[in-house]
Length: 389
Image (cartoon, rainbow, N blue to C red; front, side, top):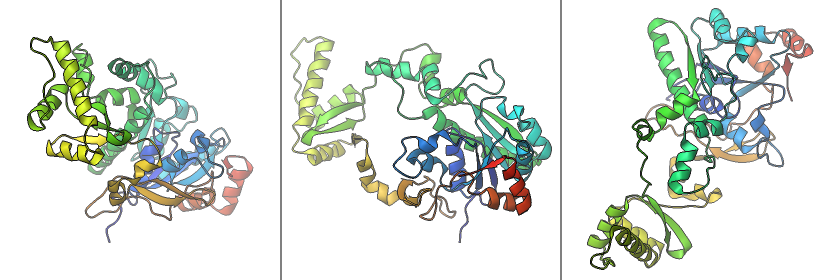
């Protein structure tokens, strides 16, 4: 039977919130053994939009399938334990503010000395050595400073507000995975590990398909992929600019031109848009509208209200997008599956996957990774280096 592509890799995960945890969740789904190192106060997302019992859905989504030890880096013996774990790891992922890992002697210099083949990914807002390295950087901060928020507000004619999607965090995780896999390739060729300095600021500008507008100092025209009111009190997004939609509706669907002879351009645009609005709304039901759009070869998507119903679409079941799992209190929950579908390899989580409590694997992980005895582990607990629920 096919195996997971990253089976056998060991990942030491110091990351919190989204930037980093999403990367290590995907590495885990691809077969790596991920050991999350959680502080005594816990990852802040454990209680984010928490239900009556069990961890939050956000924490579950980003951390399910990982092992967990709870470690107080300020305690005597903790940094030395980290160095021992790093010596056994293939990959370390962290998203502390630059300099924090160095403060405890477990930054790149310290860890690479004990493991020259180590690959270490450090995700930060502005890079490890830049002039803004100490600035606190969450996804909304980067969305603001890269111009994403202002651009969307100006294009939509609305008040500036953050994007309701942690784009900077998620994209940084995905680019972090690419960098890790690239470094693994280099390791195979040279036998040497390396440090990856990934700045979320760079990630957003790299991934922005509007960057050329800013670089050329050209303001992008407003998008004409619009949302239209549709029959049955539904809404539909139709891809294409106004000129193309008008051409399709007027030449292939019998929509008459309402503009009088000699009308100026703004009047012509307004009247034709009003005619298209009426034409779309007056279709004989939503299915009739979508059949028309399909016949005209126009790409469309229904604007679904955000909620559980978005996961009832036919492709969701076919693709296996949602999986039933168990949270840390033993409650049945649903979460999202990883998107990788290989022709030979396996990926993803199954219904036996669960989220770990803080420190749940203090004993098993330290025995399996380091071969520590019960006495040694008890000593780490006694000096408060190890914690747990």
